[in-house]
Length: 509
View 1 (cartoon, one colour):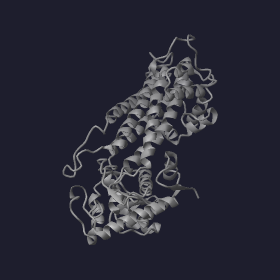
View 2 (cartoon, helix red, strand yellow):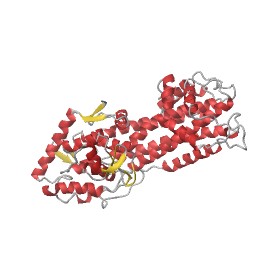
View 3 (cartoon, helix red, strand yellow):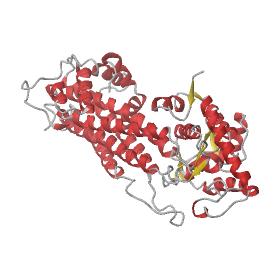
View 4 (cartoon, one colour):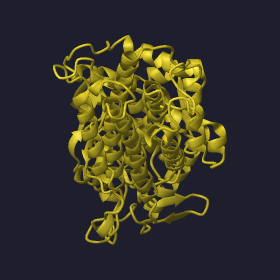
């Protein structure tokens, strides 16, 4: 059985994906078990001593000056979850919900939160037995953590709310019963420990980041196919050019293009047909590379956050201190997730411009208008480009940063919030749009290659071409195009093209 040990410190993006999408089970390390128990013992000590400590013996937010008796502690924790379950909108995808639980487990494993081990084990069982809470996508300000959506996660632990289990949406109580998991009764500090954190934005953002890294490889493949379709010049990808500037994303993208195009008989050299290509071809490494560098930066920040203690207050067992701070604030993720959306949107921007060059007879180096041999009676790829342009335009609206906004909450006690969860959700929407645009470019490039005459594609592009043509025929006369677009998107989303190309060229970066 595939299993990953969570210790609160070493979870990687790749391991996160293995758990969330690959069905890997999770367990706590021995060190994490000891830390969790030590922190809980300290919480119990403070409760017995009736020490005034925020979140343990007091209310929350604006009610932090209200002291709670030991008798009221359980009621307080349950009320916290019930009152905070104010999420709205469609439920997050099950994989995002599963990711939220994994990240919360890993944060609690650090031993700064004071949760009981039995409660934490309930969450671990939910991951391992695939009880995925129904978590509405909207309602988080991204500071004080993702309070509302995380409360919906905890509802299921209490036998409330709703969950997905075995492909069905059902009550939380039924899902827990079917999975054979006992529900919990929360006690002092536990409700706050479970909902005070950035795990919702981080789960959505981490999944999108992983997919964006794969999509950036697909974008290099699509660009290479368009370069062949337009008899593009490969001199611009010479490593000497890119080493002279020094940006690793640019260097890697140029190297990817040369490896993908290796052996092609459809590309040209400087001066053979023309001296230089337009920016959308010639500057592909610079543009794709900038997004690759952004993704690398974002990954470094995401992996820090995936292993961070993000609740409040934090319990320091060695010093026997409880400190109220602000690690729940989503700003360290809000800016990277806004950057993530922008980086993905740029892949769509240049892809749509390459598609325009394929369909525009003034720019396509001899290809027929809209990639149809019988123009007039046929529209060919005319409206494919319209659709791509629409998606690119929508991305420009979505790419406006969420993190520049803030609305005070909790009677101005929480007077600056990050909107990081909105940023992560926007980045996901931009990814979905960009995936479609790149799928359209791949379709257009294959059509153009067929019209121009396939005299020999590159080592990588020949593999990509075969994958597409196995499922989408050359367009001879007009047909319903959305089915082709949907199929191309499915091909992109499966990452089969990347896998097949890498089997011939080595790993793309």
